[in-house]
View (spheres, rainbow, N blue to C red):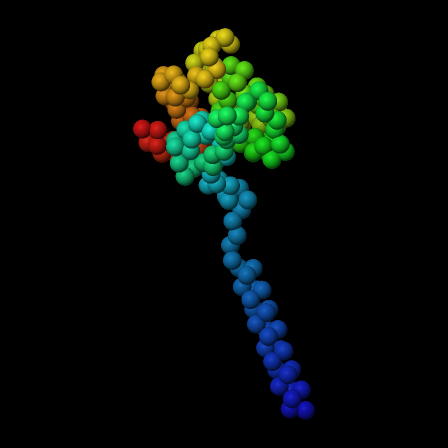
Amino acid sequence: MAMVSALATRVLGRVAIAIALLALSACVPTASPAGSTANAPIAVLGTENFYADLLAQIGGTRVIASSILNDPAADPHEYEASPATAKVVADSKLVIVNGIGYDDFMEKLLGASTKPDRVVINVQEILGAKDDVNVHVWYDPATMPKVADAVTAALARLDPQNAAYFSAQKA
């Protein structure tokens, strides 16, 4: 009888501890979904790796930068997007495309995942370049500072409370 009583005491003690822990866990504040994403880094995408590098440099810790074309030997005209690439595009809030026919595959990817708050920076448009110019506009020393200005403005629009941070990162 004493063994049953000791066993019952241990079981009741454990049940009491479990109930107390459950009650305490209900008192712990939880982050709301809106609060948890408010400080999350911004998903950004440079179609080509050098544009992604620029996004990472200016965005710093406030962005997660990705790129699609990472191999300089890859032909963008033969590129076929995977479902994983389509998801990266869909999740991105800021995208840089080269334009001038270099990364035309992006039109389809962006069209498949429209977002009203997504910012797309088209380098051809920034430069006012015609369709018959050399597609490798990033080699022109005047190009990247203009793209950097557009990136800084776009990030400031997407994350206004960190606008000064983005400006400092660009400098």
